Amino acid sequence: MDQRDFSGKQLIIVKVGSSTLSFSNGRLNLQRLERLVKVTVSLKKQGKQIVLVSSGAVAVGGGLLGMKHKPDKLEEKQALAAVGQAELMKIYQKFFEPGDQIIAQVLLTKDGLQEAVKRKNAANTLTKLLNMDIIPVINENDTVSTYGIEFGNNDILAARVAELLHAGLLIILSDIDGFFTADPKSNRDAALIHTVHCITDDIRRNASGSGNSFGTGGMAEKLEAANICLKNNIDVVIANGERPDVVLDILKGKPVGTLFSVKTTD
Amino acid sequence: MKVEISTLLDQHGELDAAGMERMSMVLANLSNSGSQIFIVSSGSIFLGSKKLGVPDQPDSLVDKQALSAIGQAELMKRYRRYFESYNLMVAQVLLTGDVFNDPERRNNARNTLTHLARLHVIPVINENDAVSTEDIELNDNYYLVRAVAELIRANAILIKEMKPGLYSLLSRQAKEPVGMLHEDDLIGHLTTMAPEMNAGEYISKHFPDHIQSLNGEG
Image (cartoon, rainbow over all chains, first blue to last red; front, side, top):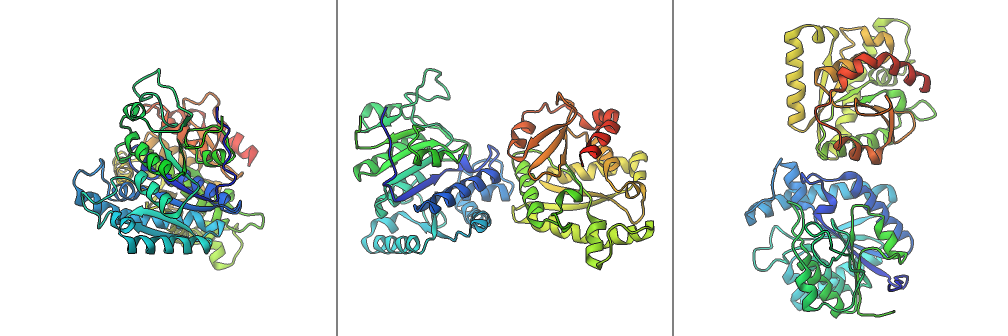
């Protein structure tokens, strides 16, 4: 097994999905969110720079309005995101307050990361925030993104942010332990793959959809996100966010989840 | 959920607002996870006495009743503020002993409480001290907790312990009559319990023992 050492990674992007942040009924898991915040603050105190890419706005909006299922229509999803994003940030702020950590909400759209001027602006803003010891909490600007130009899900967004900021490491927290040889929910023989150096067609075929009724991120999108990072020499770890302390384990070099890295150390 | 105000005081006898807020967050999360939460909380006499700057253990019953009337509003203000920050609504429900004895009132109370729970609203229940004196004389809400648990056919009773983050669980399923749980383990325990359990029934048979054992620890 590869020896992992992330001690040299200064800027870390942590992406957390709805399946980690909410219960299966879509309502927010407050204690887990609080733990994630504590973990983030503790990394910050270790001298790391942290960017949080957080889903959950649609789920929080849905919970707030008493919705039972994931919305089908785009405008419905956009409306829920608008309601939920404000609530989500309020709760993030509440949990970050005791650690004296200031956060900033940054909502991005795909064109904001593609068009040269906007891209530069976004990079400047985020870099400035990081230099001010602030943790940016990023989400897609669902309210103005429309079908076709949206990122699709936050895994890709997180990878694009990692690319933009030349991050050292992207940690994707999901409701699954990592990348498996098959879908572990339907196949008992599925085995966790510890390290991937190159995303081959074989690996792509292994990726099958997963996620609860509010999440969108299946394994295919996670692989796509990992692929973007590999091309930019950024390491990615996909791990189970059920226990947010897994982030600390990853940074200690423990062999949890699946590491995507171009570097071969064995 | 039984909350005795003495479990929410700091070493100087002042209300530990951070502790109360934390408990509210834990209960809000329990509600988010799909459990229906009913809070039976004392604290009205204590908060009333703080408001007036008088001792919180007045000798006369009528003094206690007056302090309770003042403090109940204060108590609800705090619960409302804490739960609102997690997007949950609370409702004040004040009950008297005769509600539980009269079949029609009993039915009304049950309907109101269960309907609130269906709306994801958390009822905060107390004895209506201004007109009733059963628990006020005991300085505790044990009778009320038991009566409410029976009324709504609760699956479990949680009791806030003195030690921060600890709760006692009373349920038919628990091997020991009183099981101590850390706040991080509450959801795991409660969501795996059998739904047909009726803790109120169980507790009414065994409650005197629990009262004694809990008082012994307090």
